[in-house]
Image (cartoon, rainbow, N blue to C red; front, side):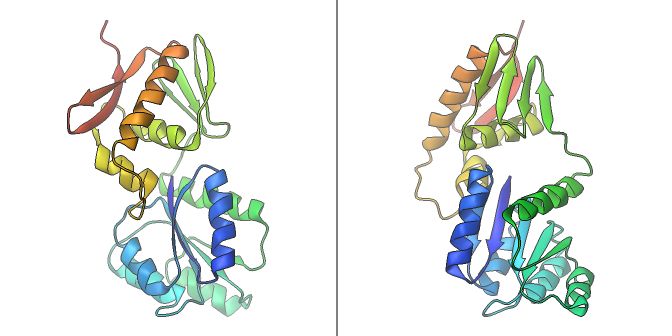
Amino acid sequence: MRLLLAEDEKEMSNALVAVLKHSNYSVDAVYDGLDAYNYGISENYDGMILDIMMPKMDGIEVLKKLREKGINTPVLLLTAKSQVSDRIEGLDSGADDYLTKPFAMGELLARIRAMTRRKTEFSPNDLTIGNITLSRETFDLKGPSGTQRLGSKEFQMLEMMMVNKNTLISTERFMERIWGYDSDAEINVVWVFISYLRKKLVSVGADVEIKAARGVGYTLAEKQK
């Protein structure tokens, strides 16, 4: 899943990015409200974490403008303010949840999981297609011939393909969702990770495969019998 993090305190932002990436989220970090708005209107995120006190535009103003544009991405507000009136204003402006600083990282992760589940009504912990299962908790890929632990990028790519079974996903879409707009990675990195995934699918005895449409993208589909 891809998250937008808007936090103007660089040290706090770096710490949050490290925790989120360790938990297999892809993260775009920005440091002011104007950038948060400009990134947010792309609708390229599964969730947004907005600090309220930011330069150029505060988090609540960002949230209001995004909702006015019809952007329904789940939003978690972060703030040092603990007054009930501030929480009410944030929630009335369209926030999905509210977390007061300081907070435990475990609670932040739990709230992110909760709000992103609400976006899709129900998001199972295990994804199954054919004879393979992908665990969103352990990042294990299981099949009749064994289990393979996936790395962060591998997990996110396979999750995208399993959620969008039989749907062509472009190379550019993988880059945007997993590596991010500001990544220095070359676009052929997608092919490299597709190669890793194909080997792991074979090793677990999968009856599905990743098919390529040359110059267009990739799709996960059942093998032809």
